[in-house]
Image 1: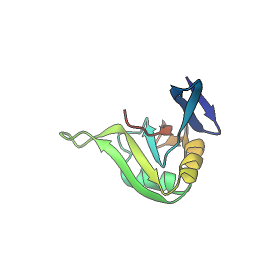
Image 2: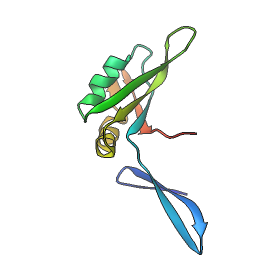
Image 3: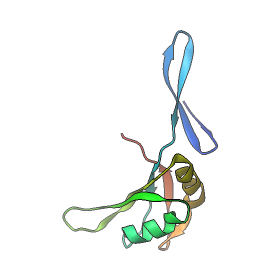
Length: 107
């Protein structure tokens, strides 16, 4: 079961001694999907940089063609700035496309 409070995902992780332990799933790293194939790292950094200091920007590209796969990642210096960027940038237009922004997690 997942809940959301103030843009921070919270998941039940384990059940011990009759109590649920909760884990907070915020992060400094954001997943950005729905990118135009023309969007590069400089464009992504400019768009997200207005919300806080960025450590790293990565647009994922096909290793054969070198063309963008339409998604990327932005890492901020703090969870607070990442949360602000997520709220402000999710479902906004970037290079003619509505982008989706979520906390990045390892699958």
